[in-house]
Length: 97
Image (tube, rainbow, N blue to C red; front, side, top):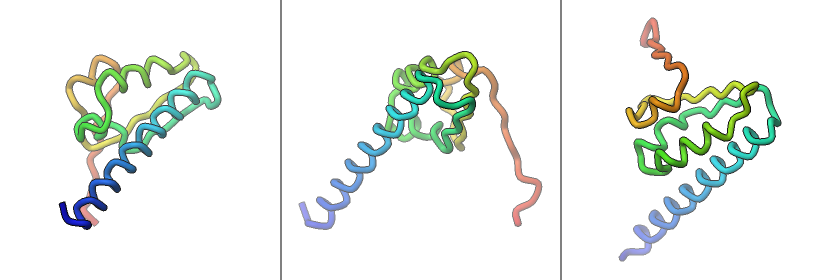
């Protein structure tokens, strides 16, 4: 394997570890009630890209206390996630500018 390919592979592994750490931190924040609202931007695509499994997503959502609002954003909503989500909004831009 060429050095560039090895570097790219290592970079992807590091990115996956960082994402897992971020998800684990979010679970901790949700479980301890450290905030009233947590927004996880672009998290929905993680399942679609295979970076987290549906079960991990379920664990994240189930860690939430009832009084905490959890907002998840992303371009792709995997159908396997729908049972865990209370509300889904599809936002469409009014112009392309």
